[in-house]
Image (cartoon, rainbow, N blue to C red; front, side, top):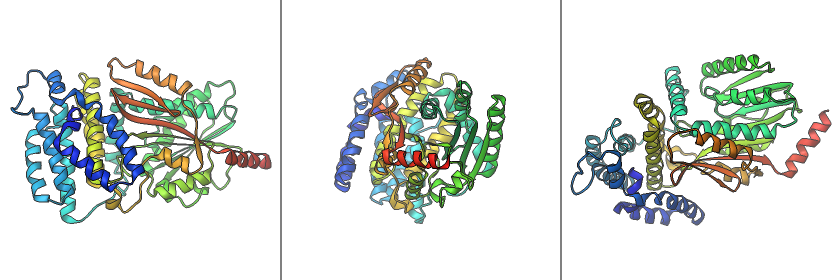
Length: 450
């Protein structure tokens, strides 16, 4: 909706020019490619899209309500970027009057971006830039997030796409392995792993041992997740062990904490991470890359949002506005009568992510150098991509075909799978393995231990 007019908004060209002048060439080119992708959707026009959604609404001459909200948000973001906070406050009051988390797609998007800008203005006045939720999640908050993820799973294929695609890649990597160790960098409720357990149990040659190490922000939540996974594994007759780690992967000192003091070198270790912006999972991105290199896992699977998190404020704001406008648009089509569930997803998940990106995100505000694209970082760290073009791609196409509404797209690019809404990419799933030298070192270590 709002994304449909972004490239035609007067403020956008100035933003792009300012961002291009402040970016290194490679970053500017990469982000320009993404914005070009986003901009292709813009030719639809907000007024046309809004009329299709709610034809009975009379346009507010000379602009529709959605276009008016968009212009206000962009002008407000420019004011914030220039530290013109009183002007930003005045515009935010008007955004609050026009937007609503229960209205049309443009009104809902504007409501959450307006809230995020209010938080940004307040923190700028106070001079306090808190990083993304460094403290552990409260039990009640964790339950709300879990419930919202379950609703998200029912309303959209994005969560299922993340789970199924990674599980298929992991299953292929574990072919012929008798001892399996899965490390989930943000396990949450562990919703992904029963599917993998079922596939492992269906193999003619079942694993002799199955171990899951789950990282998270609450030991109580981790232990509850471990009990559920243990019960499911027992129902399939799989030997199972769960190791909870209360903390962030980037703060783990060495691999012993993950592999255990009695690490069985015959284990095939795989690492998985489903990326989101609800809170900071890694802690230190530099520490995370260093630990992944020292782990030398057989496979790393990662699902990333196609959304930049570093760079200047205006760049992040415009890109996030494109991205979440598409997500809200997709949820409008998919929710149907499930308005309450959609609102929970937008409030507990998407709204929280928007707030973190707009009000908190960015290296200058967190003091931490963040990784822009984890796939690119893994390549630089000595890993090489494993194509998902076979069974994982077939599984993803089957999944998308199960949903009655049209608009979701699947594309293959350099061995990665990209799930999008119409012509805007939302998620990228990729799979990575160590280079040949690391493979040889792991194989030699296994032969030595045997």
